[in-house]
Length: 322
Image (cartoon, rainbow, N blue to C red; front, side, top):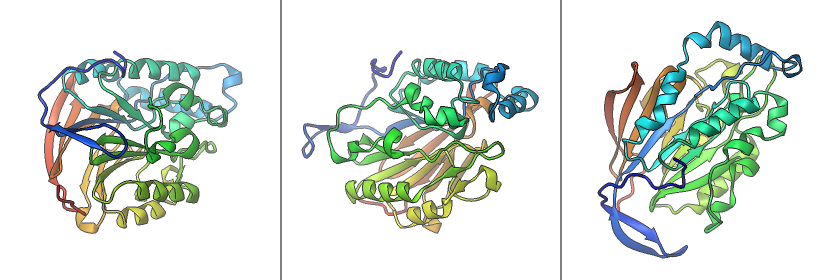
């Protein structure tokens, strides 16, 4: 099933349908149901010498001697069918679709997303920009650019490929902002970069979103520096400062670390932090969001996808009524 095909129907509550850029028609609207899934690491090994004069040689060795015994292709293959039973509104894909950015891996990744049963929004991870050639050729965006409609409002101007960010309206007063902080790096680094230019663009995009709306921010990298320097986000402190002054950003969704995390930092004037872990290692989150709270269902692979636990967290940072 492709993103354009219809999803299973289900009862709805209030919903707003846009007649044009400035007018809404009031219907019944439902809570938003999102799957947060990241770090698939789809792998195609090559030993062609011409393809190994790069970081890819180390990536192959790492997969063979470490990650091969940890990652589960069975879990990834079973996911689209399982997701079809969950009546999702959107599927958020947090990057690292591939292992070494080979064209064969991107073809497999595209075949995977084409099976997803709901509209998807994706960002690249560092493994999707693994070599300088893949980065220059924008190989990721040739395969996995987000489906977009024609520009209907100012926020639609930005796109990930050209500007490093884009906005998606999930509901009348809920937005997702997707960031691309990846770049090609040297042999021993997987650092991201929240550049000053991207910071400027993010502030510009935020200025276009009404003050009483709420935002989810999706980025491959965590912004806090609790990982080794060569795996971290350069200028993560600048992103943290932006998050502190922007209470409309209710949750920060990321991957990269392969450490499943739910951290309510709202008392510290930061958003809720959600690291869905690595799908390849058998974890992801189902998020159910309304104006008052978020419910997080954590799924784990135990020979099949099973609900592991549920947490409910109230929104109490910059809460807007209505």
